[in-house]
Image 1: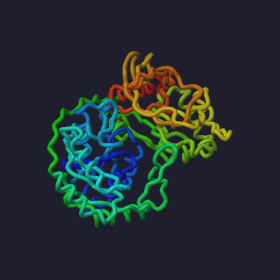
Image 2: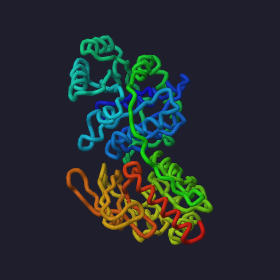
Image 3: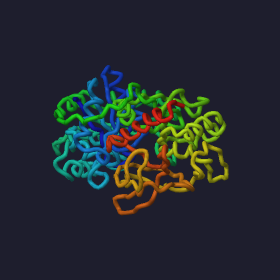
Image 4: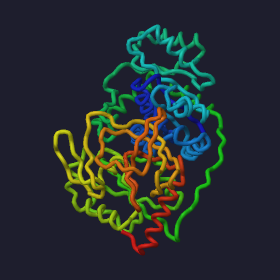
Length: 453
């Protein structure tokens, strides 16, 4: 399993730029490439996927143990010539010493190239190199790529790397044409960037000139073989797979691909639909998943699609099992209300309003303790989740007690006999019984009501 990690000194140093450019070059050279992102982020994997035309995955040390992480890395790289793993934040930054890019690289025995932003530095780059080589040991740092570096520094930087016994993998000059923009909710999605293909072409042309691609491929080929036990995954069906409708379009696009794969492996059949474009839910379904995304950007169009809103409302009333995360949770409310006073009707399954705020409401990893039985777990069970949202709700629910590492806690999660909804995002490989419980409820729905929606 040939693989390399592109990590960075900090958020914004250019690791996504380097990763996307490297993926583009490898793809164009004819390599079969797989891509991964450290941590829970949805958007960077969307960029990866757009470039290599294969779904990118997440590797997360908070959600999974070492064995599961190596299983997911291997099974999702099986048909690839090389895998590229993008780090998260700064290389050593993580949640309680468990979920940094450093931790993922150690758990997966992956060689690491650190991206350094050289803006405003010259000789001080040596101190940064020294720090990343020696701050924590053992580590798998094999060398560095220098972003926004003036060509005049090239000889000096090469000499610094040689003196410190590390590899120089090249540089990228400062060029705003390579920049990938951001918005108040985080990075913008790949589909929203104008002239993305042109930007990527310019970037890959530059990387071909000034980054040592052959040396990266050589180092990736020296990655150690990792060992793991294949997780036991139950197969659930009643002679026919449970049909699960999954909302997937510009408004609802935040999904962990491994969540969908786990449902498939357990016996689920995934049927995608668009709350924006379709007039009703797919026929003959046994379950419904409304993922996260940016429904607020399409609130007017979602509100105008009254047939779909009625179809979702009817499904909820018929007791079909529903998982709704973040944006999907917002969609189930009576309405979404913006700070400017504009308000748009939504599905009305949840008797509350979701409203825009001026600051980030929740951010980061949480542990959720179930305060009562729900669609995904039993009372007392602990599952892990991630949140990132500026929106809030007048009806946040109370089926979970959420706790952060710093001890802060709150109630969250709307739960009924057939619905689990809230701002947290779940990762099913953290506790596969969540996916199993959902699929069982889907099969129970079919059996109990003798029909599908």
